[in-house]
Length: 608
Ligand code: M6R
Image (cartoon, rainbow, N blue to C red; front, side, top):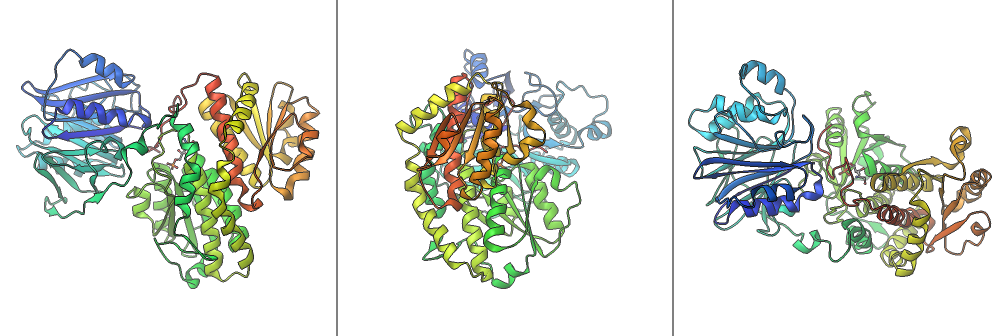
């Protein structure tokens, strides 16, 4: 998704902007651009494609300025091109604007205020630059407020004015942005990694606030332009955590980080045989009041929700429905004060999930977030937050965020049961014990020997056109995640089916050309899944099975097995999904795909 960087201070803004935009490349983008204010006035440079194209374009221009804004764009209104790339300027070239989000009423704004004006792009953003010019009264701040008054939609906006070259103005509504506080310099970015090389002191901007960045510091104002005091937070992520640390891809690095981040997700939350969250405390009365839970999320987070449903229903005996966020709010769900809505989102900024959260709040529901990003929209707007503490996830394909979402759900399932006074104390203690052993056990599926087996399996998948994943119960939930991961980064068509459902139609597609990956980890459904595997074997499909260590039956009816170490069967999904992540990774690698930034996808999806 789009990335924003802004800088004012003592360094050459061009260098800071390009460096910051490079740190945001992981968000996915199709073009980039910068605007600086120099001796010529506003100087805007843009290029379609990778950031290297922009660097090539400006390399001989000797650009220099102490103030500038930059952007990486992911197309929404208008195709990827130089002219649709940001920054966009006003007609007289006095204002430049970079924008994340969507100005929903841009067509009516054009008609009402800007009739007859010439636009150089197809974007909604250019309207903002034109409005700044239209409403300019000699005071940049007042002009921005007037423009904000007529905008509808979601935005993070950063603007410069050639007539007031000592300030950058920024504001946001529904799209994220963070301010970096330096000495004699100020920064703004859509994401923390763009700031890490320069400062660890940051401020989060709330909806409707106006930020004025100067060389002497940052002032936050409200809509009436009165100054608001803001707390400065220390960024705890170190710069190294955002680098690849010797791994060929961020995805592989993030898969390998799982044992370490599992420890962080659990840390301080297991106290003896019970769970405690620093972030909130629920009384027995509150938990008993919830007659129903909705889990709402998108993509991988939705798949985590499918596991969460089974955990919560089993542990706390509260009925749970799992919904895709983009469907949830359009189907008039039955929500009331006795319903808890759990939103799951790594980024905490996914537009569909944010919209679902707001819909739930409108109906008086309490909302609990499971997220990775402190200060994100979802974290700020929810009543209760469980952070997964996975650290920055750069690869578009989510791995460690998924597994830590599952761990958060196990903790939550145990917590709800314990607060509700359920009589399953022994079962809860066994789960907590298993979670504590998980980091160490996970190391065993990240050995060279194990990776070699997976690379060997990937060789068998790399030329397939279609691959099926099958499983039952928990095994089906992770099969869905395995198939999403494979199609996302290897571009092989992959589908996951509840193993028992194949024979109701999809079995017609199974031939010797369609490899099948079967997850056979859940003991309670093992025999039934084995029967379904025999059905696909009878159609000549090659089958790889993910099994528990010590299973000496599977070899008799599948072609290949990958085992996971023995662990409490209820928490096995966390472990069993790791070979699926690695199969996707090595299959994509064998096909020569661009793993960390798959085509057409973005890390943080902030449009609906
Ligand atoms: O940031 P979120 O967890 O809300 O993101 C939701 C999905 O966009 C995300 O999980 C997506 O499906 C991943 N790229 C999958 O690997």
